Length: 297
Length: 328
Image 1 (cartoon, chains in turn brown, yellow):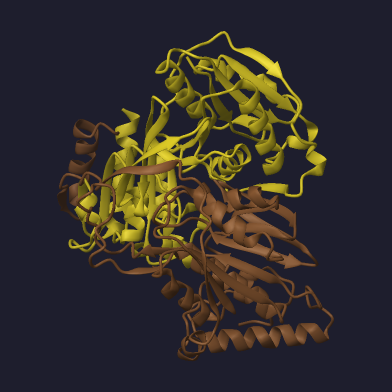
Image 2: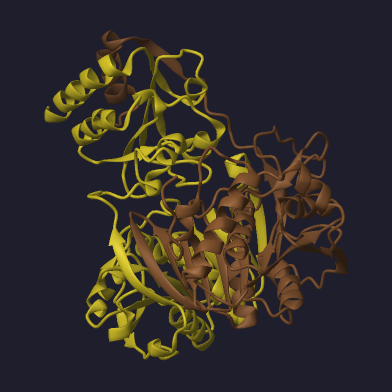
C-alpha cells in the first residue's frame, strides 16, 4: 500500500484481499490521525451522521421454489443475508466515519423480526446502532417502503442517507430517490466513486458507455454501486460488541402498496445446447451453424 | 381513450435508443386503450427540438420540447419537476421511461413527486382496466415476477430492447415549454460526462457481444476478443466481474448480476466458466456461443453452441472464419 493521502476519493481506500477489519480499521485511523495534524482532515470538527437503509434478501446463489400460492417464494431452505449493494453502503458509512471521527452510523431496515439478524450483522461490521421498522412483510412497492423510511429519517438530522444501488430480490432501484423526494433532499443514485468534504460531495455514476460526474450539497441521499468500497466481514470482536449495541424496534408507517405481485414464475430453461466439437477444427462447423441454423451471421 | 407520456432521453444532443423505445411503449399503450395521444417529453440544450421529428416517426403525436442552456446535461431535479408538471397538465394515464441509468434515476423521482408508485424494468406490459400489469425479472433473473400497478399515472421503466421502436409516423405536433424549475436552482449538478474508452457501440445496443473472462490469462490477451468483435463488425466487448475487478477491463463493461444485463442476438463467451453472477447478466441472449477448455464449465449448460479447447488456438481461427463469412 502506498502513502495514503487524505481527501482522495474513498475508492482509493479500497484494499483488495486484506479483508481484515482490524487491519483496515487501524490503517484508516492512522491516516485520519496524520491527516488531522497536517490540517488536511477533509471535514475537521464536522462529524458526519449517516443512516444506511438495508434490506434482508434471500441468498441469490440458492435454488428458488415457488410457493403454493404462485406468488411468493417457498421459504424452506432459503438463507438470508444483507443485499449485496447494501453491504457496500454500510462500508462507505463506516469508512466515512473512520475518516471524520467521531461520527455516527445507524442502520435501518423495514421488515419482520428476521431483519434483526441482518441489522446485527451491520452492527458487527462496526455500525453504532440499529432501527427495525417492524412490518409483517416487506411490500414489493418501493414507494410503500420509502414512505416508512422517510417518516423515520425525517427528524433524524442525518448528513447522509445511504442505500445500496438496488435490492437484489425486487430489483426496483426506486426507494432511494423516492425517499429523497419525500424529504426534499438532493439525491445521486448508483454512485461508483465518492468524495465527501466540507459539507459537499462529489460522485461519479456509470452511464451506458460513459461516466457522469456529479456535485451535491449535504445533507443528501445516495445509492451506492460497486466500486466505492468493499464491505468488510464482521470480526469476532465486532460480533461480540454488536450484541450490546442498541437495536430499536418501531412499527413501520408503510405507505399504500399500489404495486403488488400477482405471479412468480421460473424463467424458461434454455434448451440444452450442444458441444460442436473440440479445438480449432470445430470452427468451420460452428460458423456454419451460426449462419445456417441460428442465422446470426 | 387515454393519453400516454414517454420520456425521450438524449445525451450530447442525440436521442438515445431508449427514447424511441419509450415512445413505442407509450404508442402501444395508447393504441390498446382506444387510441389516445402520445406526448413525448424532450429536454436539452437549445437545438434539441430538432429531434422531435424522430419521435413522431415512431408514434409520438406531440413532442413537448424544453430547451434551456442549463440543460445540456441531465439535471435530476429539473427533469423530474418538468416531467411531473407535464404529466399533471396532460392528465396522462401512464408514463414510460427507459430503464437506463438516467431513466432509473428519474422515474422514481417523478412517481414520488406525483404520489404514485413505480413498476421497474418491465420486459412486457399491458393496460388492463384500472391497472398496468407487467413482467419484471427479479432475484438476479432467476424469477420472473408479474406485477399489478394501480394509480394514475402508472409510472413504468421499460427494459432496453424489450419493446422495439417500429415505424408508425404521426403528424408530430411540437409544443414548447419552459423547465418547471430554474436549472440554476438545482442542488445536484452534473458537471461532466466522460466517454469510456473508444467504445463506439454500447453493450445495450450491440446485436453481438463478445465477452472475455479469466481464461484469457492476462489483460493483453483481450486483443483476441477485440479482434473477434471487430470481425463481426457490429459487436461490443464485454467482460466478467473477475476481469473487471482485476482491472483488465473497465468496470462499465462488466456483464452480470452486478453489472450490465444484456440480451443481444449473439453472445460469444470466451474463456468464461459461467459463474451464476455472470449468467444472470446474459442468459436471455438469443444465441450463446461458448469457448472454454473445461468441458464441464457451467457456461456450456446455457450455451447453444460450444467448442471445448484452447481459446488461443480457436479464437484466431474463428475471427478469420467470421471475417470470411461476412465478406460473402
